[in-house]
Amino acid sequence: MSKFLRYFFYKNFAFTLCHLWYAFFCGFTAQTVYDPWFISFYNLFYTSLPILALGIFDQDVNAKNSIDFPKLYTPGHQNLLFNRQKFFRSMMHGVATSLILFFIAYGAFHYSVDDLQGIQAFGTGLATILIFTVTLQVALDTSYWTYINFITIIGSVVFYLSLTLFMYSNLFATSYLGSEKKVYSSPAFWFTLVLTVVILMVPVVAARFFLIDTRPTLSDRVRLRQKNESKLKRFQVSAHVAGLTRPSASVTPTARRRKNRRSMRSSYAFSHEKGFGDLITTGTNMPGGKESGSVRLWGKKARRRTDQNGAGAVITLANAFVEESSPEKEMQEVRIVGATGDQVDGVLRPVVPVQITSL
Image (cartoon, rainbow, N blue to C red; front, side):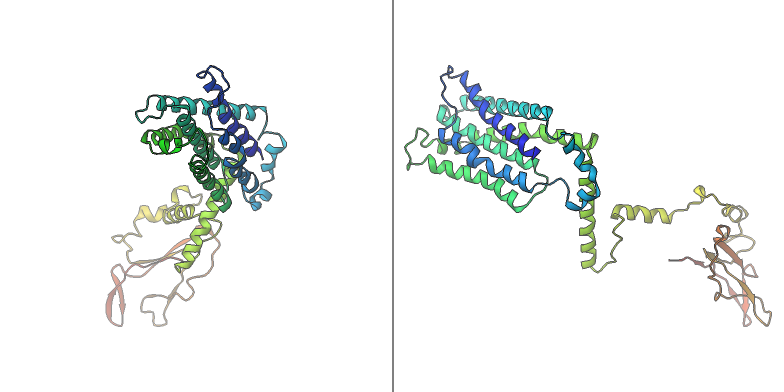
């Protein structure tokens, strides 16, 4: 509702004040710059449906986040969404829009080489630029898009152009007869329309991006969270369709990739335990050390057992994976007798270091 009120004042200031600026050029004779039919239909047909759709269907966040974050209702209770300051901003926005609309169109039409001079051509072109501008503004104000919002916004522009061509045709006796064909067939008009819309919309978009990045409200942060959750849900659906493993719903893909990279790195420098500095400094776990040919068992306890014949050290892994709660025994090293290999069945076989890691 606050958006509805702010936009209502904005579009009417932008529409009405163009008559005031035109009064300085017509000697304050009360001549209108717009066609009388346009004045009657402006608030009735051309700009009413988009703002009604916004007021009815627009929402900052979904119902779930509205319940999870009750502080979202605080700005409404404190009258922060519509007050005197908001009204003054909407009024100044409308005044600035009317100034830019009128004087850019006036300069472009007055010095045009396409014979666009005259109140009929100027009024038709100014009205068309106004409709495009205020309709694009309500599109920027829309946070939650539905089919109805899309149809009303696009339909308002199409309806205005269609009705203008119909009203200014030979079927009706009007002083604006044929002005729309002369205006719409001029490249200067379309260049003026694009230039005016860009000049008016770029500061609005830039200001909103700046405020969201530097001073985001709670609604902005919740909308960003809601957007990330929606992306994660789409990622899960696409992964499920592709036959991949479904990721956890509480971890985003970016955070999951960072987590996997961290798990591959050593955390010895940040450990509060004793660590394995002795193994590194003595070189016993290196291929060229004194006791090379070692089997390292990561995170589990290994046991050494000797066979009944006493023919050397034989490692059995049946009881190797016994739970051990002591952090100091996270990594155990079990040494095999012989620096180069063991003799099994009369044959000297080299021992290859093996690293067993838990998945």
